Length: 298
Image (cartoon, rainbow, N blue to C red; front, side):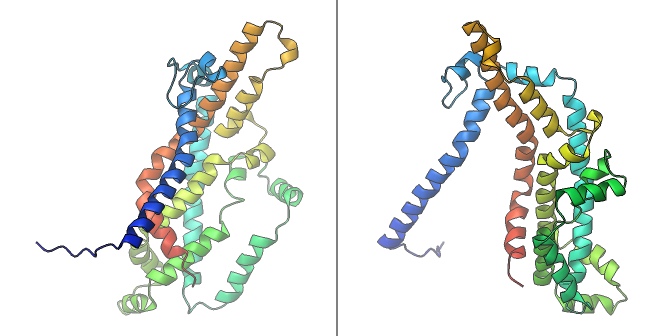
């Protein structure tokens, strides 16, 4: 069986070898902090505070996770964050597609003016206090919708989706469908969406991570603790476990408390990040394809 491989020259081999070394170095820089955080979170508190943890866990312990999950606020906060992430992402993706698809059709009247208005909001906006007054007048303060509606459409994501539709969904395809009586709505639902799984995966990932990590809007707009997302509760746990050296006279007791504080710091990062790490491998292949096509200038 013949192979169709092109023989590499010496210059090519040197080029690829140098690239491999650079990528391996970059991988180590990115991967080491993640491994260290996980190892520290499952190590003994004294090993963490004395700097014995370098790569692998030392004196395995789940004390940090036990301290976090014994807090009664954690599970309700997890449920709130899942709610904000799921409902918010569904609304974000639906509105983004509903805005991006018409703007991708060159036959749309006023398309350029609407794109200009969308782009205008990327540069100029009201600011924190006007936004707060607007939310107050709308009656959204201290409600779940305060974390979902203000960012219902991210213009940058809408532009990526519009470019994807322009590049992959041709006008001739719609004309062929319209000859059989297909409307724009039916065309979007039956043809465009099944052909756009890559960009939908990108939008889900972008919006989902944004909602999962969001805490500033909750900090500003929410007052009821029962509505707090996970990030706010984890922040409170970290603050409660901060140590004031002037209040502790026993060095051994101070070392233990400092060790628990460090342990909580690493455990909180893992608890807050783990769901995103678990989801990313399932959308990674669509993510690369969707971003590459959506980023093409059009």
